[in-house]
Amino acid sequence: MAEIKSGLHYTKSHEWVKVDGDTVTMGVTDFAQSELGDITYLELPEAGDSVSKSEPLGVIESVKAASDIYSPVSGEIVEANDQAIDAPESVNSSPYDDAWLVKIKLSDSSELDELMDSATYEKFVEEEGGH
Amino acid sequence: MRTEPLIYELSKPGRRGISVPEPDVPVQEIPANLQRDSLGLPEVSEIDVIRHFTRLSHLNHAIDIDFYPLGSCTMKYNPKINELMSKLPGYGSIHPEQDPATIQGAMELMYELQEMLGEISGFHQVSLQPAAGAHGELTGVLMARAYFEKRGEHQRRTVLVPDSAHGTNPATAAMAGFDVVTVPSDDRGNADVEKLRELVGPDTAALMITNPNTLGLWDESIMEVVDIVHEAGGLVYNDGANFNAILGIARPGDLGIDIMHYNLHKTFSTPHGGGGPGSGPVGVAEHLAEYLPGPRVAKVDNGDVTYDWYQPKHTIGRIHGFHGNFGMHVRAYTYIRMNGAEGLRQISEDAVLAANYMMNKLKDRYTLRYDRTCMHEFVLSANQQKKNGVRALDIAKRLLDFGMHPPTVYFPLVVDEAMMIEPTETESIESLDKFIAAMIQIDEETKTNPDYVNSAPHDTFYKRLDEVGANRNLNLRWTEEKAEELVAAD
Image (cartoon, rainbow over all chains, first blue to last red; front, side):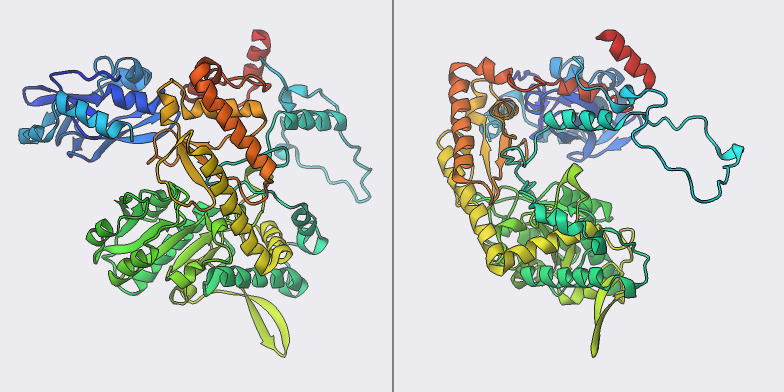
């Protein structure tokens, strides 16, 4: 069973969000990495780029497929995780810690209310996950 | 482990395959400043070359060796008479810049093929230029763009693509400068008509539909889908990659489709991949005929029938050097002539029957998401096997031990652990049963010995390859230094 951390916010496209004041850190969930399989490549935006909620902010590639990474919120990129880009396998081994992907400065904190909490996401994965 | 060296590694200075005769014309020296010291070409004898490539061929799988049910790719048998015809000197030894008067036979064949493809699919005109399916798609979408520009409908910027379409469809639309909007599937695997109604509008340029779709299902709402898009003023593009299912049964042109590409290397039995270049002609309804790429072949009847090149009035221009992959036109023409109208219908009926037979024999073992009569292919899910830790990829690898090519895996994306199986029409019942038996045995193994499946293949020359390593550490260019490192590491 994929790990779902409490205290984080989640999207339907399987990204996690950790809130710290007006800045959030985001990555992809353990469920997402297990579905994708071995990650081989990451493409992330650069500091200063602006992103919009539910729009693609980057690309994640595995042996199986290439998928968009969707921005969970709107705002400006503060930092991208260069270590994760250099070692994409860290998304498989540590999706919530080492392989955080970007930090975003929120432009509208009310968007956070539209994300799921861990219990809701767990239910969502159970229902949607098995296809 | 290294097996067959590269031909460069077999090279020995001075070794030759052939002896070039003494020149019978005066020798002209190439100026020193235009000469290179080395071309870096391998120097090998004839028998070295023959043995090298024969050994490599033993490591390969091909339709000429065994079953090859690679869904979506229609890996059908390529009749050998196609090859024979394409090598006739009047087809194989001509040049596209010859005077048309000297290549009338080849031009007649192209004209006839244009006409036959049009008749089989219900389209007014066909261009043979595009070199592959996705190239045909791009040609079609560029024609749609030119069509709306000519009509002054510049606001038509959106192309709708159902989520059961081929992955190239949205890529094509984006490449032609359109915005792509996805149309979801309904619970029977058809394009969701209600959602489509909400999505069309004055910005709709086209809908790109793959029908039969990539789940191997005929879209039961196709007439309604076409009407909705037409009422909004858009065009309907049909990805004809799955045309093998409906030859002589349904004509996309009659359904109101405006544009379609054909994959001659699928439906019309010309070789795939390394076997030969592809060919993706495009057919269109009458209102788009003048936008086709040119030059095309026209029949001129002044008492004497001749063939000539001509440019359609609003042509989008050339999309390929000369006239497309002509050798493939000869092969497809031969295939159509060898089978005739009744034979083509039989091909589709047999392809659909074979797929349904296999689907029904396997659906108790592997999950079938849409339990409907399928067309020429079907998609199973390994989601039950995944509970035992066996994934579609592992099943595919295990199938190699049975001497058969695996199906397409992990496509389409809308099915978890997808395995897309397309037997084609030429397989005997024994060969279908052999594959079914292998799939049943593998399913048993996932319960009794999943590790054996997960470590497959066991009986092939190469075992499980490190695909992740190959992806993470791309190493695509041969150099002498790398070769020496490999030899040293052996």
